[in-house]
Length: 580
Image 1 (cartoon, rainbow, N blue to C red):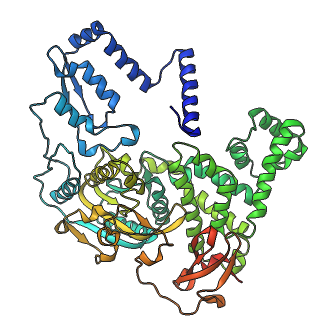
Image 2 (image 1 turned 30 degrees about the horizontal axis):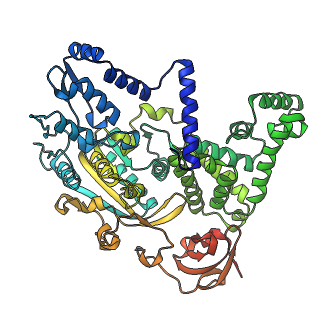
Image 3 (image 1 turned 90 degrees about the vertical axis):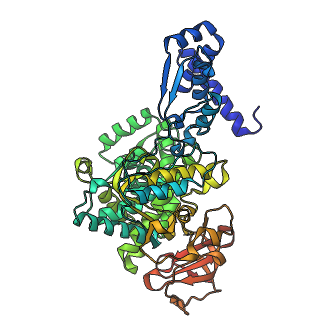
């Protein structure tokens, strides 16, 4: 029984979906499994027929089966009783990483118990990786409970130590990775044998930017480059309409996204009128009457409002404002699968902030946000580019850890090893979530044949904000004799001590007393006559009080408590703060 409006709506939608499927006599894959199970369960002659027909059943990737699949197999084999089919199951419970798709790692343990398996064969010799890598993987996964248990080994020798790098920021981390890749390539390594792994798709943006800037060909395996992703293209289309309302391609892309009741017929009428008047789609709208004219006029007003409201905002805040007012954020928040797309949208704000920091623009350009926006859009188009040639080239491979399963590379960089990112912050709140993250780490480590790099950053721009991070607990689970730190280990960034044993992830800048920062030059007197404790006004966040400051020159930033709007870190070169 549904106890809330959201669940009631889901039940209603499912009932309507089921009615439609029955009307058309179709089933989806999950329903196909369910119908098969029900048929075998209720029809004993049919079940016996198939048990006699198929005397031996082989199941591969058993760790990725869901509960319904397991019940189906168990019924088919008659739970191992005489007369049922004989089953041979192959799987690795330490590589069960698809719980979000319904995979149930406990199926393997249940199978061993319920079928009274007498002979479990452990395939422990590894022919891929050197023993330093395997020993690290064994040590990490040993922290999980309820495993069937195995210990990987190899006769290929210890190999090189696992290299660990601590960066100040995600940008520094990405630059170091690119420099290391360049060094490896100079020494004869193939770029196609180098993989950059990350926990979340949104992390690829800063890596892609540095690879692009260095002229290194790369390929995003199992996904799209950052600026090719659907939600980023939608956001850029809105931004292009702000910079140039006569951009017909951008107009057509988002005029009805998110859906606002503008159908194909209205767009056809608009297109025909634009040919007659020889004007852009945007400029043609005032000439239309009736329902098409009314609905399209509402979209034009939205674009005009965006242009007006962002005329004085710094570039990152301009992007943030557009994501809200366009409805893109609300659209993806309502989408069950929209979390990753929201992360990418937030990363677009970071891209704008990085562009601003790297452009070194003068005050005159900063005073013209829409002109700066046009430069940013040109930069985004350049980075997106036409990368078809990279597909067959000797290109560095970028992918999430999930996409890397089943693959292997001579060199693997695993970035973003920070609490809250890997392990992911959501895993702390989910039953067995941390164990799934540890299995994901196990998969990541065992992708490397010869050389493995692990890196993390003290601060990272993620989801539209700067986070000050503790290094991942998974780093602490690797025996120190297997690692070689390329930077001096910083005990203050360790997950154990600073976390106080709490399950948790990251600290936002508002958690100032707990934040561990790398040393940065400080200033006693702030630029522009500002001072700590002073009240200031900001165009978007309103009035607040400066509570902290760090950095100097172009990197100078202040922490401001804006009350209802929260505590924010702002770059002084960008924020346009006014003393109150």
